[in-house]
Image: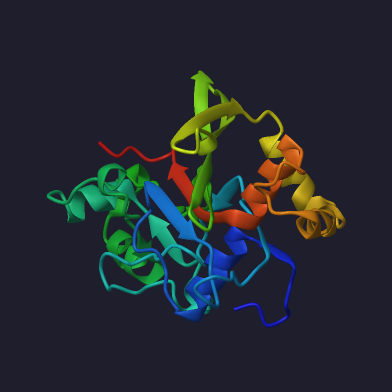
Length: 251
């Protein structure tokens, strides 16, 4: 919902607000996450412009933690940070379970159960390295945005160049037509993609300026410059936002 009739927001805020309204949390660390722009009618979005966050950090408000022993969860805000991991206890208590690196679940114990497990270990306790669960170390990175205007679909996609370097590409399946019969697709570089997102979050005139452009013509109109058209498609027509988690091994 957009009760304050805000002109813009970011997709991470929408995601977090949705989880709190349900209420719900993610049961696992997801390898991929697809977020959909909310609408209050079939044709109108709840927010005129949506900023696609380049990164979403997972914390205790988003991810569910469950104690392996007593099944206590972090839904209670008073106990949200009261969860620990201990590889030695996990190996001894659950030798047949899948390791946390492959099933993407956070293996943990609440402080009470961990204390009970460590109580009678004696000198063996020195080999146990218990640590508080750092959920926020997991981050989801934006890798694509699918934009829809009526039946016209375009996409912004992050492509890896080499090692840690990447570039953003713009794909339009209906960039032009031949004799009004065949669509001509287009793939082009978008060197300013990340700059647009950064500016949108800081410049208070960014979206009012886009509003002024919208009053002039439709984004498909030739009156728009190439960059203006693509900025409108990204922030106005962004419908599906694709994120990936590169910190977890999903073999």
